[in-house]
Amino acid sequence: MKKRLALALAFVVSVCLGRPGRVDGQAASKAAPTPSAADHHDRKPDDIFRLKPLSGNVYALYGRGGNVGFLVGPDAVLVIDSQFKEIAPGIVAQIKSVSDKPIKFLINTHHHGDHVGGNEVFKQFAMILAHDNVRTHMLASPVDIQRDYPAQLDAAKKAGNEEMAKFFAAQIEWAKTVKVEDIAAPVLTYDSEFRIHMGDETINVWHMPPAHTDGDSVVYFEKAKVLHMGDDLFNKVIPFIDVSAGGSARGYLAALDKVVARVPGDVTVIPGHGEVTDLAGLKSFRQYIADVVEAAQKAKTAGKTKEDFLKDVDLPAYKDYSGYKDRFKANAAAAYDEAR
Ligand SMILES: [Zn+2]
Picture 1 (cartoon, rainbow, N blue to C red):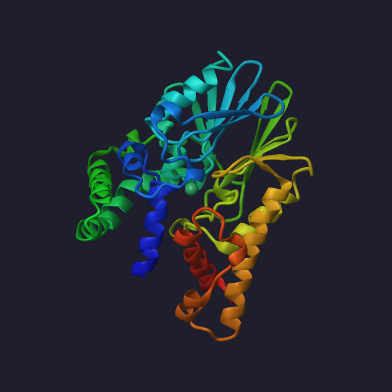
Picture 2 (spheres, rainbow, N blue to C red):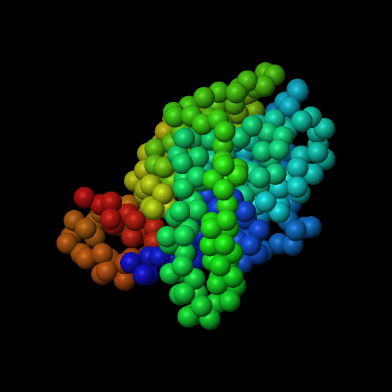
């Protein structure tokens, strides 16, 4: 249990910051102790952005945290994910560099702090939309943090990890003082799917089976043939499966299959983390998840204990994926727990 927490923790702070919906990303993002290049958590505020025009006025924007996507429509701009609070003004500036249209919509793909931290900025001018569970997780975050973080603060202090200790202390302070009504949660939430129509573009928002969390959305721009996967896709990056927020290894397979069945072969794919890719990239990630699930199932069927399985399990084909050392065993543990 302790080990699982530690693994989850390292990742939470380095990539998927913010446990349930921490919305002030400032202290958190500064504290990121083990950033990896693919996650862009380690760049200075002034050199973090990379803008990649895709088809049909859709753009991918790499910054620090979950990759942003946006569409410039005839009258307005729609944005997907907001990274961190202190990064959000930079995101807005990047958008303004290609369009002076007002930013009217922000879709959150899920509740993690590296995807919703900038909501506080965006809520001043945009309507924030997400799956029902995103709002639920975000509103619950002060309680969750006050329950879970004091022990982790102690552990960080004991381990002499000053940065982590500072991060947890700041989170606890925030959780104690924030008013639930001030949390920049989505104001329009949905259950299974919805569409937004902007000019000749149709933006499809689909809820996924529980995968990264239980509140995952993917966004598909029908005319541009661009798909934003949120954290249901980590491209050449080992994912985090947030079991505590309803995530599931098997669910990842179901989610990926659902998406693959609904998009064309020449789709362009923006992952939550890693570089923009295509259908082949999506399928490689599915193969990774399938391999983890299969290894866990084999071990369980053979009567191996979880401990023995985790000691031995190794998938060398994915060793060059960012985060293999930090998160692979946690993925395997999640898959073992779900094996029948
Ligand atoms: Zn995430």
